[in-house]
Amino acid sequence: MATNVDAVADRFADRFADRFAKVRARTERLAAPLSAEDQVVQSMPDTSPTKWHRAHTTWFFAEFVLRADGTSGRVWDRPEYRFLYNSYYEAVGARHPRPQRGLVTRPSVAEVANYRNHVDKEMLELMTGGLDTAIAAVVELGTHHEEQHQELLLMDIKHVLSMNPAVGPAYADRPHAPAVDPGPSNWVDFAGGLADIGVDHGADGFSIADGAIGEYNGKFMSGQQVLRGGCVFTPPGHTRSTYRNFFHPHTRWHASGVRLATDRQ
Image (cartoon, rainbow, N blue to C red; front, side, top):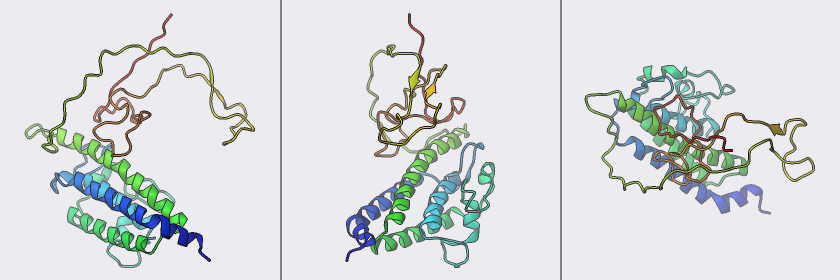
């Protein structure tokens, strides 16, 4: 009798392998215009080197899918990788401080590229044999995680290159179609006052805690205009009308805009 594992292997293994390969390849395309020197710089604590992004997204698959533990001696299972490229997964073990990622010159960019290649090979071989539902879910999560880091990679290298006043912040010579004029900006009316959030008890969905469904938000907050739907950093497939810039306003080094609101009588 066919098992759940068999069903996932037959129906989804090829799709997961294809998506995995495409996402991983896009990260490498984003890094391709950068020199090895470009990829090790951390221009402020809020950024991370390109080399680190490439390694961290690889560590995710090695750690949570291939079950690296630093003891096998394989290329993708070195103990220092588990320390250097863990970000904030405290349950996994100790990690290198984020503000000091740019101080790490070793492993080299070439070694990180080799790390990625070996993990990719192991992952694709694993998926060829089929995936159970639990592992399939982790693989899918990992691809979305890597797409998030693709966005961060671009934001971070933008700041890195802006630090060089002599050469200028040129990432790649790539022509862009001129932006379409959206027309004049106008105020949009909406109903103010208190609003209930969440779902009612007894309705389909998650129940909410008693007394936790009312909120008054004195400040007005909305999706930033520049990032409405996405921006130049947004990975393919992530652009949507509800896209929201999750960075704080004081981090001016990323692509951001502002939308204002006022009370109308």
